[in-house]
Each structure stands twice: as structure tokens, then as C-alpha cells.
Amino acid sequence: MSEPRTTSSSWAQSIVQGLEMGGVDCRALFLELGMDYAALGDAEARFPQDGMTRLWHRAVELSGNPAIGLNMARVVRPASLHVVGYALMSSRTLREGLTRLVRYQRIIAEGADLNLRMLPEGGALTLAIHGDRLPPARQSAEASLACTLAFCRWISGTPLKPLQVWLQGPPPADPEPYRQVFQAPLQFDAEHYGLLFELADLEAPLPSANESLAQLHDRFAGEYLARFSGSRVAHQARQVLCRLLPQGEPRRDTVAQALHLSERTLQRRLQDERTSFQQLLDDTRRELAEQYLAQPNLTLLEIAYLLGFADPSNFFRAFRRWFGSTPGEYRAALDSR
Image (cartoon, rainbow, N blue to C red; front, side, top):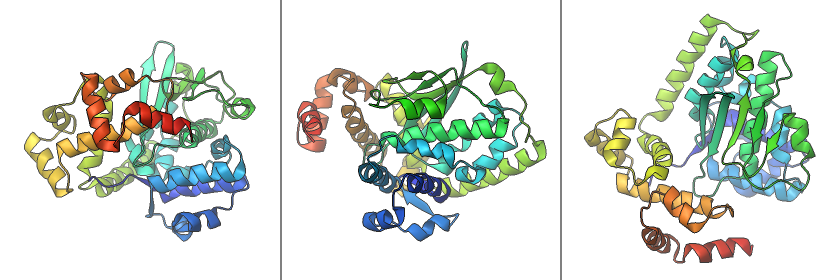
């Protein structure tokens, strides 16, 4: 099995501050979930992503506020994003800063996959949250978008308003908290989470720009990422698999090429982490299947293709092997909870 995804203590600390602002006793909640509250003050500590997912779910239950993730917009500061926050601050433009955010995202939290694309209508920063054993909490993605936008407003010194905010899942019963935080057109049931910025906003110079500091922070971030990534090729391969699966079953040589490794080196590194390419592919498909089945707008046929199965019957057989039931039975059980 590959190593579990983790979240930096700096990001976890900001989540906790946002939850406590919403009236949640996180010290007691950490104890309940078997996590170390004191480790929030350790800059090198990291928390298991599944632990953070449980934290989000329990916080929603205790507060009765499904929009509690939006509180992250009120606690944003450079340290929330580890060294990446300072690298973003010292960038020449918002576009350059967001490019750094995409590059170093794994330092903040491994479960997030960011992408910045320049489109004719603007710059799209899209976000995917990949669960570990548990499907990710909706609040995790909403908190990430709210925090990112608040941080961009802070470093630009402007009341930055996106052209569009994309949010997965159905519209909430009360959309007002979302309107207040994002101050932009909201699209729920979107294909992905994301923010669409005006190109002019992305290219405007940042008041805190400092090329020398940017290079210094790049070095620190690169060194941390290299130290942190070390032998964690399984995680990198899993990220590549998540991107490639909708195009069909990925080949090992394609994944190796994406990671700038030879097939043999990829195979050896995965063996060192006590897994294999086939095991990683199977694990990734199983985890994504759980997440997709929790999205009622996706049909079983669409899920089969998103998981890279050319023949849906192969998906049904694999699913029965994973969970001992059919996808339809599994979804029905989810709906009855």
C-alpha cells in the first residue's frame, strides 16, 4: 500500500482556527479523533488526511453549519500556506504567484491537485481534492477556495472579484454565506471546484513583489518538497493516474514518462514503498469509485469510464471484488444513511 496523504500543520492550524471561530471545541475534537492538538504548533508536523476529513464531518455535525469551511477566508495569513505563502507574496504578479501555488501545493496538503489554465475568458484556477481512504469533505474544497481568494485579495491590496466561482455539489439551502465570501457569480453542481479570474487582475503587479525573496522562497520550498517527497513516488504516480484515468487505462510507461523516470526505476521505487503499479492502479480506482458514487449526478456508466474501464462489466467485477456489492447497491446504501 502507498503511504497515506497528509496535511501540513500550518494548514491544519488555520482549519482549526476557522472551526473554533464557528464555535467548535477542536481541542476536545482532536482528542475524540485520536489526533495530537499540540502538534499544531510544530512546523514540521503533518496530519493524516483522513483524520482531517473526519474533523470536517464532526465539525459540521457539532456546529450544524455546512458552510463552516468558508470561515477560512477570515483567518488567512502567509503562514497558513507554509513557505508557499511567502513565495506567493513575493511574486511579481498574481499569475506568477498562483503558478507557484500550483507547483508547491503538495507542501500544504497532498490531497489537493491544483491547475492554472489561461482561457480566452480569463485565468482558471481549478481544484480537485483526492480522498485517501475516505472521500474528501465538501468543506475542505470550499475552505481552500475561500482561503485562496482571501489571500489573493490581501496580497493584491484590492477587493478582487472572480468572474466565476465553481462549486461541486448541489446548491446549499442558504447560499448567502457563499455570496458574502466570494462576491462573485456562483455556479453549483459544477464539473470541478475553481475560480475564474480576469486576465488583467492576474497580470497586475503585486505591491509585495520582491524578486530576491521570491528566489529565496523558491529554494526553501524546493528543498522542503525534495526532502518531503523523497521516496514517495507512489503518491506522485497516483496523482498522474487520477489525471490519466478518464482517458482510458493508463500504461506503466506513460506514468513513468510523466514522472521523468524509466519504467524500471518506477517499478523499483514502488517496490521500495511496498506497492506495485498494478496495486496502485487498483487502489486509486477503488478510492475514486467511492468518491464518484457519492456524487448523484454521475451515472454508473460515466463512473466506469472515468475510472478508465473500456468495458463497464469490468468495472462491476472490480467493484464487487473491492466492496462485496454492486455499485448500485453501494450507492443505495449511501443514500439511505
